[in-house]
Length: 318
Image (cartoon, rainbow, N blue to C red):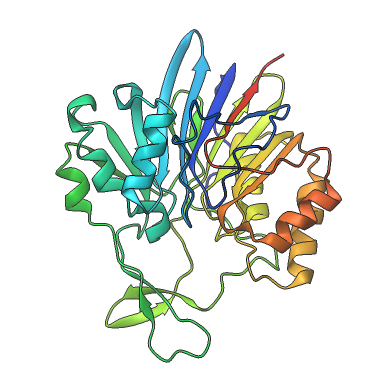
């Protein structure tokens, strides 16, 4: 169990770029919160993949701070997007990884290595427990699990970064907080048994005990909660942010909700619980799954934003 409440600093503005995601649409219109990437020429297209990466900036007390959260899996594609979005690694004050799955860490080394001269030595790289463990997937009908690989701590440290393992909530840049280990409070948000982790001599079911999400407290608006995959459950994740911050008001819920292949009743319970929180903006990404995305659109049409790779979301005070 994590501590009940901590002092959470407000931000005047948080801007989140979706560096890569599963979907890209060059003609998707802007929304109240999102500005879409517009290619200057037909040849400059965003890369989309089964992966997720964000870059974010907070603005508080006249200071802007940057953080990259998750890194996608295809280094050339993610690097393409970083260049098109004009993300400057010299402005990155921290890096963070939501959990140790390949579609979130695979591109990290190959995109950070050439940027090493721009990144200050000792820049923190935040991870949760078991982030560097090897993980597996047991597909239906298979008898042998598929090896999903692992990120190596020494490879991160070789880039001159400082690996910081967290279990409790912590501020990683001004106004941006990791949730710490996420308490499981809903009865229906369960990790699928096909996801495994190497502990001891053989793989066993993964409980994602170290999974991290990020949250912000936007002045006068409330919480913005940003997940990687939400294996712990997106409702659990938002409630964790509420518990840690002591705030009930939710301004935005954004990220992978891991409802792909979920049973209809689980999707319904999740949508109902998020809807009851009355967020102003909902952005399902990555592993949310078509059926769940459609359910959020149907039940929360005024709050729903269809994400595309390269989109920039801005949440700010009045």
